[in-house]
Length: 243
Image (tube, rainbow, N blue to C red; front, side):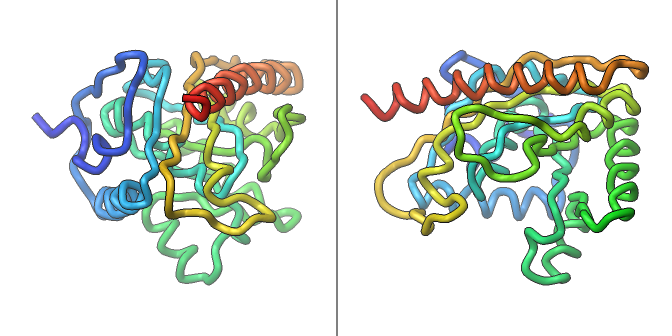
C-alpha cells in the first residue's frame, strides 16, 4: 500500500474533526516532488493548516473544487484537504497573467495546471480542457470569485465552475479559506517569516449539478454555500488568533 501522506503534509496539517487520510491512489511524480518542497517551505515559515470537512471530497470521480480567494498563498492550503483523500492531484485553473514568464506558464501546464487565456474569444480552449479532465475523473480547482477579494461577503461569482460541473457530471465542493491574508495578499508586502500563522480550511458538502440546470440559480446557490464555509473559516481563524 502507498503511504497515506508525505512527511511534509503531515508536518503542517491538523484535522480538528478527526478526519483520517485515505490510502494514496496514484504513484508519485514530479508534481509530488515540487509539492513536498513547497510544503517543506511552509513548515520552515511556521505556517500550519487546520482542515475541517475533508471527508466531503469524494475519493473518486470528477470534482470541481471551489474556494474563496483572498491571498496569493491560497492555492497551497486549499489543496491540503486532497492529501487526506487519497492524495488526489488538483488541476488548477489560473489566469496566464499570474505567471511572470512563458517558461513558468509552461511548467505549470506540464504539472497538470490549466492556464486560462482571458483574451476575448480564447477562453473556450481552457474551459474545454477542464471539462475533459473532469469527465476523466480528475479534480479541477477554480476560484469562482475570479480575483482576490478582501470583503467579508463572497460577492457575485463567475458561472464557469457551475457550467463545468453541468457539462461534465462532476460535483462541486465549496471550500472556505482564512488566514492566508496574513501572509501575502494584494496591495500588501509579504510577511512570510516570523510568528506562526495557522490557515483555516473548511470543506463543504458536494453539490451535483444537472446537465439542464439553471446556471444562474445554481451559481447563486454556490455563492451561498461558499459564504457559509468562508464564514466558518473566518470564525475558526478568529478563535485561533484569540487563543
